[in-house]
Length: 239
Image 1 (cartoon, rainbow, N blue to C red):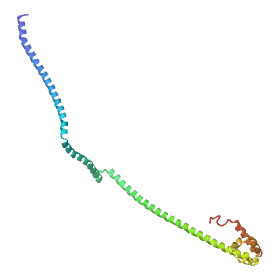
Image 2 (image 1 turned 90 degrees about the vertical axis):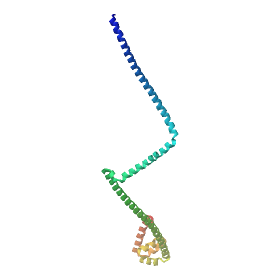
Image 3 (image 1 turned 180 degrees about the horizontal axis):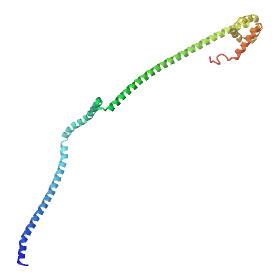
Image 4 (image 1 turned 135 degrees about the horizontal axis):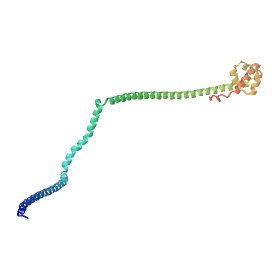
């Protein structure tokens, strides 16, 4: 190694040391800045936690203020449904807020309601008329039944009276002489004669018919046979 090379190395050595020191200074500054950032972050987190702990304590220390502030909010919330209800009423009251199809539908429903109400009134009126007619018919039925009972009672009374009269005549003719009774029988109408003859005893009737006109006696015999072949009175008609 020559003297010139040695001198060159000696000259470059201080420069190299200077740049190394400068680089070290820059590195140390970066490290310090990073460390400072870490410290600031730690302090920020600690401060935030401290504020979070202090916030509940402050809220617990001032409950009256919060409650006073909550009341207006509650009142506002209570007024909210009323406001919605009023808005709904306003929408229902203002037909301009409906569409044309909705208005048409409402009109159809209104017309349908009128028709139904009219039919309901008519049905109620007819029902009332039917009930009134039914009441009158039931009343008439009761009156007719009473009238029928009265008629049946009168018929029964009449029949009993007629039977008594016939029985009285029968006794009279049975006690008469056959010749005299035969003369009277020939003058009587067949209807009356049959009523008397039918009730007479056979042993009392035979002598009388023997004294009568043969044609009249034959006619009486035929009519008696016909009457005795007929059903008894009341057995067929239920009277």
